[in-house]
Image (cartoon, rainbow, N blue to C red):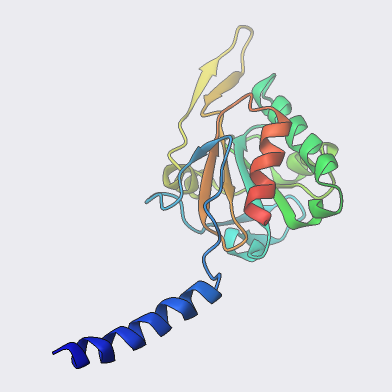
Length: 197
């Protein structure tokens, strides 16, 4: 029996040593936002970008992706969030090319491709605004548990109350972090660097 244990122990030791030599799994990340790695919601989707191209989330594999849902008539939450991500791209320097910011409208009736083209690149030329039919947008919102509701405003028209956080994906396309509204750009930059390392 001892000789059998020795014969089993040697291969086990070699496997353990070989495993120590490989670093296939990156060390756990330390995020400022909420780590939602392994979340069961989300997934790939396809919408029309403001440049007229049909784009899927999977098209950006190899980059970190920041996904935000908003609308162009938004008076505060949306421009504030977009400005924070614009500050992130400046902080990242050359690594900014490894990040794709996607702005998905919750108001496709007003946010046509042309409207998004006049709004989203204002924050950064590399950012993409995305839209589609009401049904297409609703399906994507449902996947990411985004809630949006029209609210009538005095004098006519409407605003939209909507979920205000954003999501971060790693370069493998995995949903990793939830960033609540008003997360400062320094914290966003930290988390994106964690995803890129």
